[in-house]
Length: 80
Image (cartoon, rainbow, N blue to C red; front, side, top):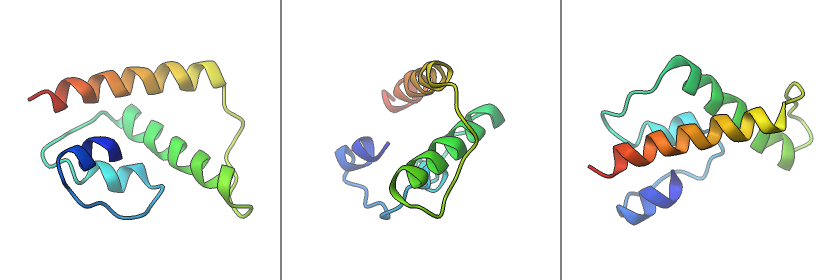
């Protein structure tokens, strides 16, 4: 998402909060399931960098599949 914002010359905050980054794409609506995915990925990014964060164990293959599906969906929205 940050790469697409950069391509569009949109400034974005230094954050791991993917939900906050998504808000910079005005008019893009996602499902509740995708919102949960972004929340989990945001928490995972924080946990991997900072000691004070923790997330429940994740099924790596499931997360990769969900993330790929989300990225493909977002890619179709960015083509417009």
